Length: 144
Length: 350
Image 1 (tube, rainbow over the protein chains, first blue to last red):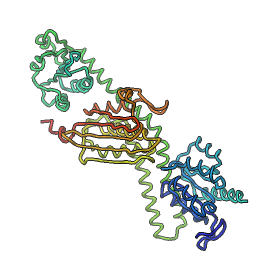
Image 2 (cartoon, rainbow over the protein chains, first blue to last red):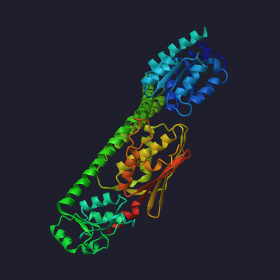
Image 3 (tube, rainbow over the protein chains, first blue to last red):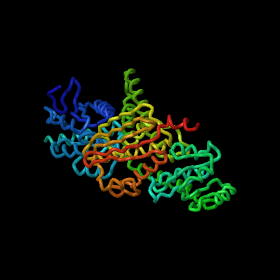
């Protein structure tokens, strides 16, 4: 599955876009992937900010990555650092924060940096899917 | 020891009062306890004296005949003893007895109550910093449970249903373990008598709790445990001391990461516990202050300054010692030494 764009087909299924999930907990990546695949998204995983930066810089992801979902409390490059990096290097990729620890100051700071949504775990599948759908619309606008 | 500034004390009566005095006075460097006497060879104060390697005897005349005693503390409560002492003491020896010694005993008890309160207050103040860690460790499994449950509502594959149901059960168990750890940690230390505590098990429990207080992401862990390391003491207070030392170690490495080493050794009837970090270290001019109350290098509101003060109090109460070895930018090691419980416990009764 190398050549595709948003709205094209991957492995015979409709692909609504490519999402990168960054979280150190394998359980979270697994369940977020499960939730988003149902809505037809192609989901990539990264364990921490460092891996996320590698992933987004590798090959076609540079162009094909549509939306990122990022945890905050992670080893190596943590969420806050990763978010600052992505906002300045990939401003066209909408970012959703998915955190276990609600923190008003942090939320404000992320939203100022252009993060499109700040979700607190546990989040219902429907809410997560609609946040991703909104982010996808932003991504489409950025392509125009 | 041996300096002329020492007050040399003999304690008469080794019941609860004598034992409490022994516990308090042996911690004071300027006081030398030459011995404790009681007619009952099984009196609790005599047992404690053997653990502390302080001479104990059932022979009162022998003890008060010892040369150079500056003060005899009579906590026998026996009016005949007071008269006997005044008749037989050397002219240079003072006597504290009757209502004066009773008042001292009440002060000692009061002091020990205050120390317990202070311990609890400092512990509860620290729990505030656990919020982010607890939220993380509860909300992550909740996210898994919610996601799986939503999926199960539609899942057709029976094998997947079984697997996901099992995942949910495991996630619930993990979450309830957090509450169990925290309720055990936050409760007031039970006033029960000392029990045998497995040091390695307590260190692991402290490690789980310390993870809520600080980020271990950049920390490499090394554990070198000698099996069977056991000491006699209050398990809740020991846990509190370990959480404090581990949290400090991790904070010292917060900015650059490093290695946390937990080590236990049993040697020559002693248990050695070492908690080492490779963090920022303590400045040599500060090192003698670290066990003082209200000493802190943390930002206002971040620490009570009572952490190490309480750690030292807990260690001393369990007849242990605490030492520190630190080099700026290399790291710090706290070394706790306790009598090994297996050898000095039951054996000392005989």
